[in-house]
Image 1 (tube, rainbow over the protein chains, first blue to last red):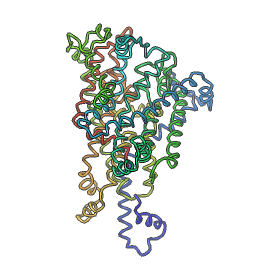
Image 2 (cartoon, helix red, strand yellow):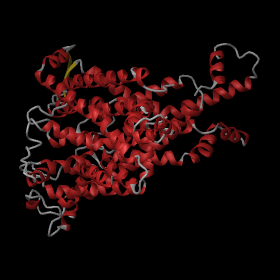
Image 3 (spheres, each protein chain N blue to C red):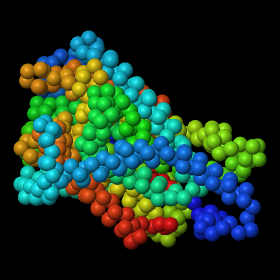
Image 4 (cartoon, chains in turn yellow, blue):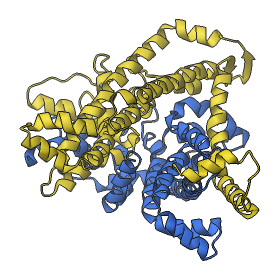
Length: 316
Length: 268
């Protein structure tokens, strides 16, 4: 909100309000007091339920803290060393990277394709928009449980595959397929959000620009690439950030479908933290893993944010 | 074209149908090969089993209660703060706003362990307060602050000047001028908040123990054989269908607000 007057008075406020009736300064102070009062619940809530827990995660990560015995001792960097040298954590990080490396691009590409598909002016198109959005609305638990039924060895998917002569794997119990299944369930669940964000952006693209491109002899693919994509880069970044955070906090589908297994094949960071803290009661160790998750989200988000000047169009 | 649109719809919509029809099957029919789209003898009684054998009704009411109270709280906290961040000048305004927004970047798994300690220090473990209070004042409220600020930024300044002339103070401007105009974003925020609270999984899983206090998502994964731990698939699917029906009903009635609420967090 660039209001020139406010910037001026802000700079002046350290000096005596020369030549100004005192009444205005008083009003401004009263107004500011209302401002602080209005934001107080949100800010205090943030401090207690967001900032304090983050500080707590760092604090616990330096402790050997077993919640079952209730004993905690300061151990310095021991948890970090243990984590970084553990094969299990290495596998968990690799799984997390694989998961995100498929989920994030899938959200961008499939979400954009679907948005283009439903951005047509044809009858009953809103029925299809609604249909594609259904998984976003229903809970992840419900979505995971129904896929649990369908992906069982003798479940629907393999039943239908058998009808066309394909013998499907045991999707959730086969180490070669479990991660693929989890990724599939995750992408179907969330891609509707990407579609809606892209659809909103596509509808803002001025028709004249597309018309001009067409007159200049651009084909549909060319005008999409050279006109539409540059205009929607802010949304592309938005979807990338959202998909990154959503993929890194994935938990319930792993908990419900595979419990990280078979073996460690679907054990990703969000599940690992829960498992360590609430099943193994290793709170210090789990907090150290949580520090990693926090740093990964932070670094990836900042990278996307900093890189925006290089490719995001019309960033003001 | 319509064929393509319909084909794409299959993986998004068919699972919901499968949820419903599996809920009507006998236990033995669930994994019939080839798969049975619609059972010959639909067992409508399956849909009553969760209510008879367990506290599913109570758990349903818990979810409605928690989501409603959370929604009302978030609307109050978010509209106040969103208004202040958009319309009132005070020192540190942008710094505080960016600080709040950072909450949206933090996955719940990161903070759940210390949050557990905080909540238990308040004596709220195994109570609904553990789900309600951190939601009203924590991360869900931040999304609301952002949405409401975006809306209030666009309100013309003349409206408030007119209110000032009529002798309204800051609180009056908020309640009499700004809020009545904010029905659309408030509705979108209410739907989003209710939905997120209704669908929460990690927090109730960690904070609640007593079966009678559970919310619906936690209850759904409890329809398992007590000895083998294998789900009682047909009953579980009946309960799952029951859990998505209210949400789907609201969605079909209010899809505009739904979609705008989601899109509204992305544009501007």
